[in-house]
Amino acid sequence: SQTIHQWPATLVQPVGSPLSLECTVEGTSNPNLYWYRQAAGRGLQLLFYSVGIGQISSEVPQNLSASRPQDRQFILSSKKLLLSDSGFYLCAWSIGLSSYEQYFGPGTRLTVT
Amino acid sequence: GQQLNQSPQSMFIQEGEDVSMNCTSSSIFNTWLWYKQDPGEGPVLLIALYKAGELTSNGRLTAQFGITRKDSFLNISASIPSDVGIYFCAGQLRYTGANSKLTFGKGITLSVRP
Image (cartoon, rainbow over all chains, first blue to last red; front, top):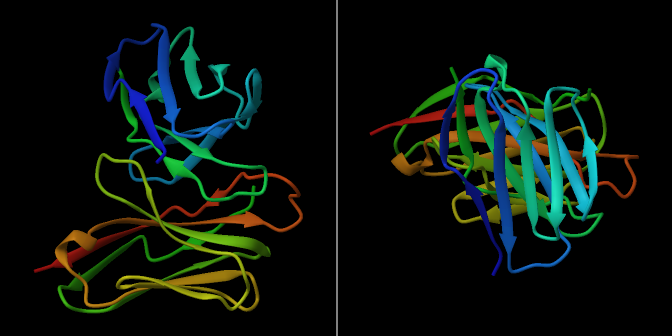
């Protein structure tokens, strides 16, 4: 069966510091991968999605970036964090271009101080 | 961007009661999904609907894909304390082609009084 991992689970970083969040999927090949951000008490905002290695689409202009160095690895990064980057970051996967069932990881709680 | 409307933002029910939530849009959707999120965790897929008029159950949960393709409903019967959480609807817009991006509602927070 497929599993999705995210780490770290929680992170506290000062403003201006770099960021690297990692997501890995097991038990499947060539998944579509997604990064979402969830602000406190609000819905899910799609940040990036990827349909293959090195293929990244950005949904929202911001100081974040994403990379997919391996088939089942998705990384969210920032060179300099802003206070507004605080939130709950969720990674998700799906299979196939026409599959709309997305499965989420456990999330990373990021607090920028 | 496209909106999925979920209201009210919060619902409070007594244990054992049934509850119904709906999700509406001004746009036509090809797919409707319902997720539940427990505090501090990622959303979990409850039910997926792919055909207008489709009615699907998962235990005490029943969801329907509206005939107009612009809405969906989720019903929870005989609620229990572990039903507490945030319920999100999500959909795939018609005419987006081979694209597996979803549009999410803002969620309804369900509280169950014992």
